[in-house]
Image (cartoon, rainbow, N blue to C red; front, top):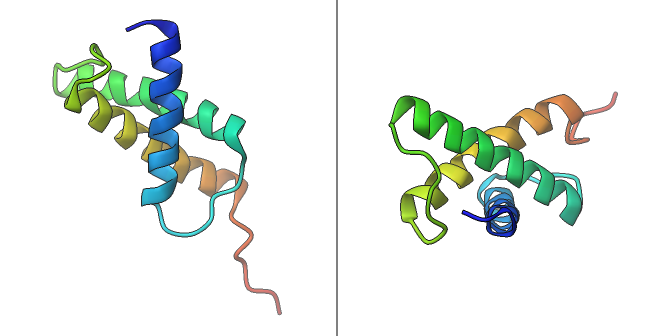
Length: 90
C-alpha cells in the first residue's frame, strides 16, 4: 500500500472509530489523522502478530477491520490519557 493510501486509510479509520465510540472525543482532523494512522499501524502489527494478517491491500475488508480496530484502541487510550472533560465537579 502506498504512503498516501495509508494516510487515507488512517484518516477514514480514525473518523469511523470516532463515530463508533460513544461520547465526544477531542481533537480536530489532524488529531483524527494522527490517531487513525497510529491505530492502523497498531492494527496491522497486531493483525500480523496474532492473526498472521498484516495490512496489505487498501480495498480489503480485513485491512479496514484491523485499521478501525486499532484506531478504536488508540482512541480509548488517548481518551484515558487526555481525559474527556466529563468529570463531575462538587
